[in-house]
Image (cartoon, rainbow, N blue to C red; front, side):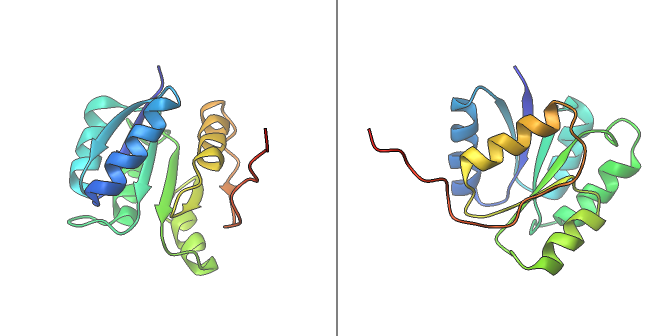
Length: 139
């Protein structure tokens, strides 16, 4: 089972997204702030990290830079999660070392697709611009 580290300071968001990802077959390791997230990443070496950018103690940008500067965690894919959807926010996330950028509220199907691509070794930057959720099929 693939292990995802979810670093999110909002309890409701962390719990809801964690449960949604668990239903998709992932084991989710939760962290409440950037410092806890960096520590847990070093201890657990997850397969992928979901990084909220607006975190207390150490923000997501700095936490990402710390993880990228540490050999044990430098190669772990990181997806930025943020409610800020401007191009400058995306550019800042990628500049700090994130491999992909997803906006909140998260479209789970799109997030899972990005996770799967990164876990499959597609380390090309997965920049996903915000858009409407996938259409539901009638049936």
